[in-house]
Length: 168
Image 1 (cartoon, rainbow, N blue to C red):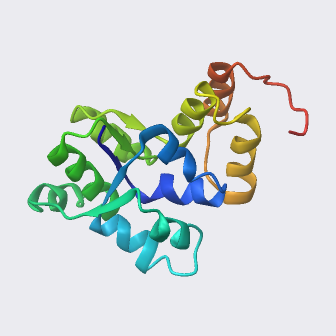
Image 2 (image 1 turned 180 degrees about the vertical axis):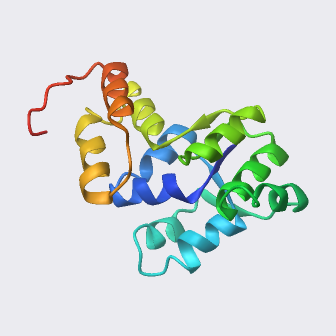
Image 3 (image 1 turned 90 degrees about the horizontal axis):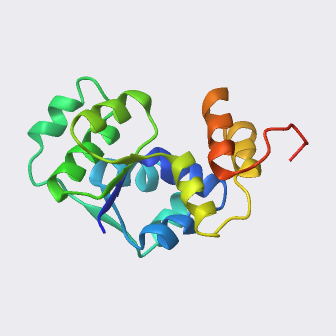
């Protein structure tokens, strides 16, 4: 299975101390140079830098052809553009990406996109986490990750979890 990731999913999961979920679900994750630079080089002393650098199952890969990524970067962040281009180059099974515009672009290009909420749902389905509700709450409150109320509710319904606000 080939899985390419943008930086947002990696940073969100490392902030939750849940990066290992990617390895458990996908075994191996590929990131383009720009994402590596954002998370490891420019991300020095930021959430995820050490974890991503030490994860031998995360592979940095250069694009063979940059022109498509350059064209995409006129509308998208460089990391999203390179992640989409690399996913297409490699024929990826999944692209891990959270930005709305990036997701729409990737889906129009035929890529299967999963965001951090989708990763948490898959982890719950495989029994890797007992509940996604506390993780979603932490994403919003501790990490500052934007999750719309409708996505929050939809994810809880998909996970078979209570919509009630109970402090968890």
